[in-house]
Length: 262
Ligand code: NAP
Image (cartoon, rainbow, N blue to C red; front, side, top):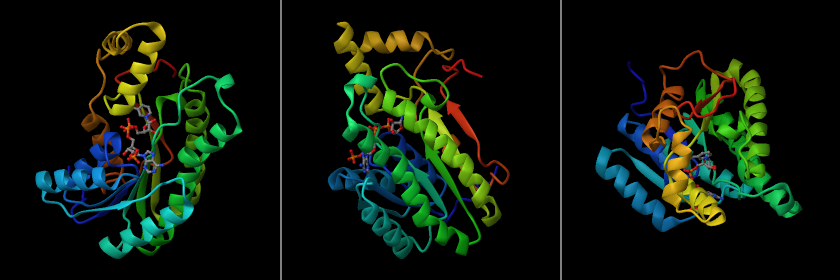
């Protein structure tokens, strides 16, 4: 299948490591030009070098805290300046803190809103004029399996990932006429630092090791293991490619069959 990504310009938010980095690497393997971003310039520089060394792709990076509107606007402006356009936007973010309802005050709710939902609103607002001028584009939002089935102890994620889903569906209705396709993907348990930290948190609470928690989680996944970041990234790349011409407004899970909800 020709993915038609050679020379396309791809902006991946929150991409110094984990799922964002894996997506950037897969786009680079397909011949796209990449803009990486996160809050840690040194880590970004290492990640950019790694991707360049492996793929020979053009990889830029810019430090950006996606909770800040002006930083997102500057990031998009620099992407257009350096790459020429934004053909693909991957909306990713750090995960909101774990906890139950009584653990959080207003400032935690506000922080999670700004990190997971408002960053998406702002980045879509910033890139769509450029995509319209270029006759279309592709957007994928990285959310969580919590939009389909709430996860115990992750009430902030459960709330805002569901909102991402609603927003994405609404946007698909508004953006379709401009040739902009937008979809949302929910990871189940894909082996990244974030998942390691969540396992450690559960382990500390239950007096287990992180390995024991992981083994318990894996026993509940039909495919019997955590996913690899590349297994997640391949679907992001497909949905953002020229090979996807008719899928928009959808939400799907990449979870090895973990979530049982229909
Ligand atoms: P990760 O390994 O912790 O990576 C998070 C990335 O986000 C890093 O590059 C981090 O860089 C960046 N980041 C965090 N806050 C940022 C901010 N304010 N501005 C800019 N960049 C920021 O996480 P992951 O596992 O890849 O997960 C990515 C997203 O998917 C998260 O929202 C997570 O909750 C969600 N998710 C993941 C899984 C999974 O299986 N991995 C499952 C469900 C949901 P800096 O900290 O240096 O800025």
